[in-house]
Length: 336
Image (cartoon, rainbow, N blue to C red; front, top):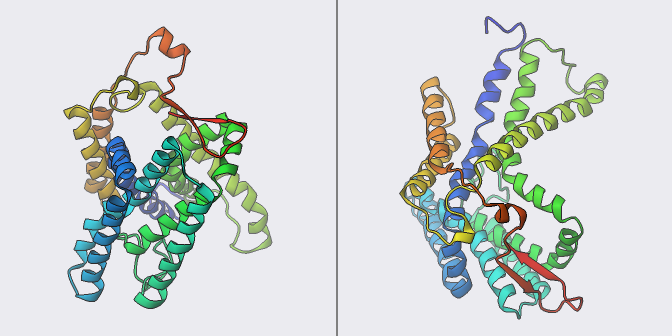
């Protein structure tokens, strides 16, 4: 505060807001690490795997909301809720590889059925329709996730199935852009509030800011948005360069190796760090130092540089090429 001529409280608010998106690492890292096994499970036993997750979430919600069980038991379903769309994707890919999937018909059914289930949960069982915690007093669907969270995810998978053909055409037309957007997606989510906080810090050190909702404020919005996007782009680019420097975390898929103890420990550490930041945040300096140390340790455990040979650098590896049934043009999808 002594060094900031402006409103230093903005920096504190920004520091508290920036790290929570890292909670997504706690949901995505274990699923990605076990992706092959989950994909096989979903492909061979879709009803058992997805239905089992939904049933377990229903039991946990019933215990919390109907039987006054302790609220902490809801966190048991954290992984179950977020693995549901991954399992649905694994089943989808399995069906595409083996043919016989009418994506539009199946997708429409999924979207209609699970949208209807979601409406029933909201109007008959007291769930909030919001998927983010912005409604005061409403039942949260993210802290921890609920049955409604998984149901909406399946409805969205249905919508994606319906528009899959169009997305495929876009992907083939702008393949490089599509790939880059996919690679940057998690980085954008993880860094966007950090970028916002850093730009807000400029106000704390004395950069003039118009009074809110005045003409000058509205005229300055494009500049503000451009600044936030530029900072976010820089953070994502820096992360991407480091990721490319070290390559994939763990064994390469083309070698068919299993993750060793170091990689497993890295996954556990990174998951714990993401969960801790998402739940508690860096409220005090010791906590911020501890969470930073966990992230640094997980990065060290997972970052094993691998040197590709000249032939590997020149030629990308294609694991499979699959004809999508029903496509008269014979276009082929690369599954990497």
